[in-house]
Image (cartoon, rainbow, N blue to C red; front, side, top):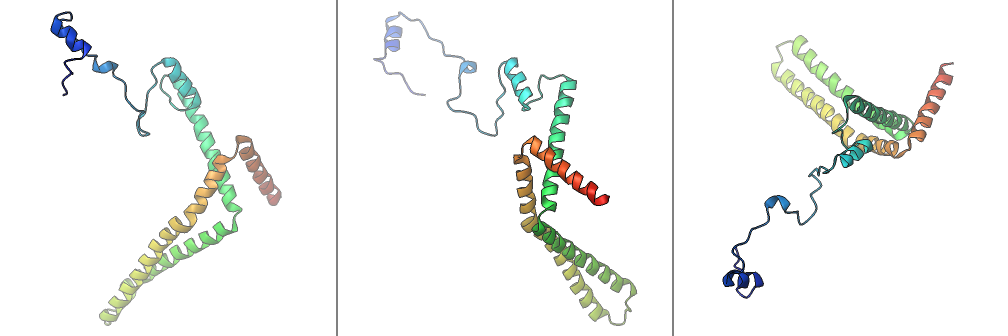
Amino acid sequence: MSTRNPMNKRSQAQQSGEASGFTRKSVASAKPARSAASSVRVVPASSKEKRRQAQRGESLVGLSKEEKRARKKEQRLREDRAYAVSNELLRGEPEYKSRRRVFWALLAVGIVATLFVWAMMVFAPSENAGTMQIAQIAGLVVAYAAIIGSFIYDIVRIRPLRNDARSRAEGMSESKQIALLEQVAAERASKKK
């Protein structure tokens, strides 16, 4: 801790006896020098501000059970609508369809290879144990590579399309989302007839 300069006015007053002592400010009155980090949630001091936050959908603190349920239900409806719109946007993309076919083909190859290895283990004669083991190991390598490859393909090639469609859906206004869903429903109804 640093020492105060003896020429300071407060030090002079203490030395002359005018001021008998001093008190420090309490730690509770100290204010942060900079704003809180993004991961820190700052709680508003007044209940009026809490109510405003709750109305904006930021916090459910201070609301009754019915208000909380209504707010959560409204949020779920918005999320469901955005999810449905993003699915409809994806259905219209030919690139997404072709990539999904590749994903399912890779997954099918992996499952078929697994079933083939299982069938070789159950029904193969034990006379050619060496060659059968090599074939089984090769089949399992193909199966694992195809299954793992299909999930990696999904993450690398398909997920960006899904994320793009989701962000486009969330960027739409509520009326545009509803109009798109109604249009798709009308097209499906006309196809059924």
